[in-house]
Amino acid sequence: MLIPPSSPPTQLGRTLVIGGLAASLLSITVASAALASQAARAPMDPCGTGIDDAALSSRDRGFVARRLLACSDVTHGRISDAEYHQQIAEIDAAWSTRMTPVVIAPPTLQWASSIRGFSTQYTTASWAADRVLGPPDVFPSHGDNANAWASLGADDRDEWIEVGYAQPMQVSAVEVLETFNPGAVTAIEMITASGQRIVAYQGAAGAKGQGSNTLRVDVGCTSEPIVAVSVRLASTKVAGWNELDAIGLAPCAEQ
Image (cartoon, rainbow, N blue to C red; front, side, top):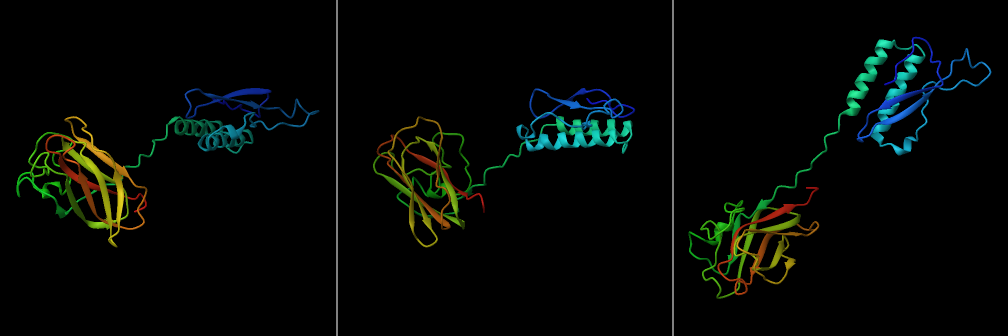
């Protein structure tokens, strides 16, 4: 820490140790010259530094500037030694405190609110098509659960379901939560407010084990609001009932 003299500085060099965001400390040599003993030479700035400011972050440059301003003030008698020490202590305390990173939470998903159509359902109550509506009530658990949608038969045909959303919006992603025998989803289509169908995902079916699975498809940001999503399953390719718990839409970041 720079200790101010009771009169203008007289030594040619003084080391000022400054804490920053980095783990190591930054040493700054403060050159000074007393005009009385340096009459034959041009006076030097007693608070000048020998470091390249460009090598510092904007935050560190700000703290260096504040420290040097305090040095200049005490050198020229604008503040007392006590005021200088107080200012330096406050600057160093603020500088040594790491900035808390700003964590941007991912956009909240909008879950399906209506059934627009489906191929089959196991019953009209348990494992019914409308069990896919709303936020997940099975995921992240997995297994044969009556609160997820299941088709009438296990492996006798390909299946599909189409869901609608209460608040049409431009979206950046679609999420399908599979909670039993995942891996049967082969296509996901988004339906726009004008009726256009956009293929968001197309792929081969393949078993993914007995756990639950999140099939998330990032689509950038759609140019039109999305009002519905259609999901197709190749149920004949993945043995057992292929149950879906929920289908969500992620809004674009700017919304």
